Image (cartoon, rainbow, N blue to C red; front, side, top):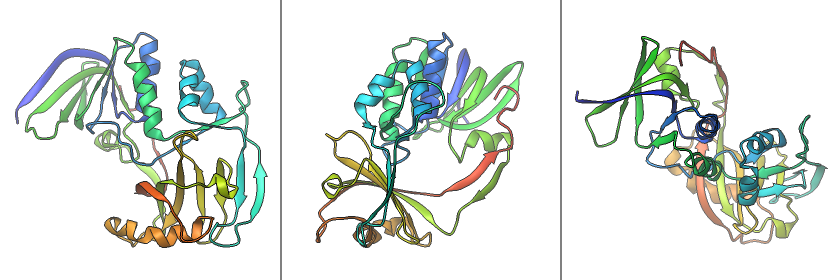
Length: 296
């Protein structure tokens, strides 16, 4: 196998350019630490993922000077959370609770913003620092530790050549299926819920017209859901997160959406909405047995 060697000995290499990796990279760069982020994808993936950011998290954004940009890009929730029955059924409001407040600090609101948009803000700020770099299309393959350094092997799409990087420390921010964790043989203890599957849907629909607040839980034994704004009011995008039968093949999920949305959404029929994106994923109750092994 051909191999290209990056001769530079990096201070920190972060594997994974999701919000965790990019926020960590920004924080380290602000402290003068040289950071290289390696990302397997060719860009930040815009699929529906996390979007609720609570006061305790917003305080951390405030510390690195990005809170204003996050609030501007998203929806500032000062309304709190509603509990109601599905819109396709009785459509009744059951309860409302105000937004929370962290034990310290003065932030008493939440911000709703899609994970990929949040990552873009982190990246924009991080790239203002000359000691921060990111490399896309760089998939982690393996690592080993030697002489107070971690040696990483990576691969790129469309190339038979492997690249080699050396760093004082490696930080794995590569998600629940972490290849770094697997390479180190660290157990991912716990279990995965296999009798249902999460389905995240980004949708354009006028929920506000039908009395929906910025965030609500639909309470039902079968047709439960979280329905919340996924960004600014001007964008008009909402998130519907619900459960779906795990036996349905991924390539057939969209065929089942109209019936599911018919039971969930409020308003006169026929419903008129626009589906922007759909992302199925599993729910886990797992944790790595250790968060550090050597210099990783």
